[in-house]
Length: 577
Ligand SMILES: Cc1ncc(C[n+]2csc(CCOP(=O)(O)OP(=O)(O)O)c2C)c(N)n1
Ligand SMILES: [Mg+2]
Image 1 (cartoon, rainbow, N blue to C red):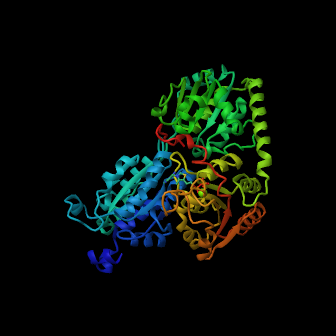
Image 2: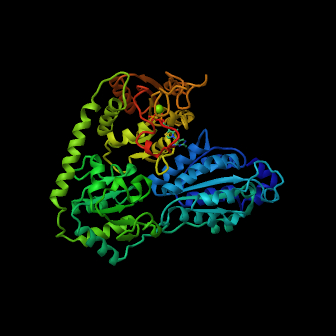
Image 3: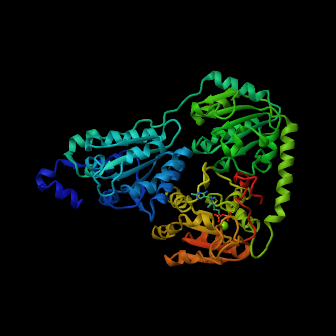
């Protein structure tokens, strides 16, 4: 602000009817209901952050932009409004960019607003402070990228960014804000008129009646139908229509990771515990907001068995159809409109799914659940994953409104399988890329956006990517309980380097005490070595709502290489394991 006032000296009188870039951006954000910003301050956006805070926008300062970016990305997923991340030029921008790309890949609406240096100098490459052509760099990594050069374009620039982020398939948008823009002055009246309140930012996209009819014909003819719910279905907030479709059809459903809880994992039709059976044996698969990417083995190969499959795909993005295998019945539209249209067209006399199939799925599921049960009740010390997760599974069952954040390899894969979810959008994790580092950003945004308690279950490696943000958790006094599954390393803590004195590449300092990091900032720290200690300490943290970090000591030998996806590691004939 001081800078702006210096550049634009004006007396109190003649500034009365003026506004500037700082104020216009704040007004434009507020006008569109964007009232939370996640970021890191610095030139040229420090004063903007202060002024936004003073104007009633919640501005949460992080310790690293990547975590602020992950917070914005998941805020977008949770709210269907673009999550806003604010960064400084060049290095801050680049730190935020990973999260912007992550948001785009995961179809989360997000806007990365970044200050940038003087265009004239950047474009002549004359070595400005934090010089970088940010717009060009952002472009391939997001859904849209815009630069605003004039204060009178702030309104339209933000409107474009919002619409690009949330309409159609949502994604990340970059908005470049050169330093000079903030200080530009214009008539307050013209400024007000230049603002744009976005009307119907994500218009309904109604599916064609013929597509609905075709899809239902395929579904009706199925002998072994399956519904797969993806995180797009969770994002859509069409929970009632999706439940109606699933229950009316009687078809077993398989939730992808972040769709868990859309219908409870304990629902009679949930096939989560019979995943391999339903993927292999189904003959018709209806995908709802789920892509046939690597997470579903591209819809072909061993995972999917030999039986011929027909796919019905409900997706907002036409290009998604036939991306990996031919789709017999595409239904293109927004998920709310599509599922509502399907339910409506099913009418009242829709036949139940074949009972030999639903019976077989149920039997398989019960068999697998029974097999797992004793492992979850073990009281081993040091704990193994199952003993520790058995405890957390019960805690989540007793607290279905709590938001579970989860990352790691074994810590992720096993928690996903073991911890049942009961309500929509309560499980937040690594998403499409399997990225480590979403933990604290997601936990902070989940607490801020929903006000609900958060339980973050983190591998010790995964936690390290965003661990410094425990200070942020303490600073804003958020109801976040972090449980670090400390097995001394990545996948396992037992690797030994036989060739030199350096430690093996996958291990950390043995017996680390992550709980002390939280204590350093005034939160509660607990070292838990048994399932009983873990239960007590997590319950206490969830009851108190006080920032807590529990160092859960896990047997360093308990995990497996790369968790459940070790098969993706490249192998060479020349190097036998
Ligand atoms: C940004 C990023 N860097 C690296 C990786 C590779 N990676 C996958 S899982 C993982 C850590 C696994 O260890 P941990 O979180 O301790 O979980 P554990 O298996 O030990 O329970 C790493 C580094 C990644 N997925 N994302
Ligand atoms: Mg680990």
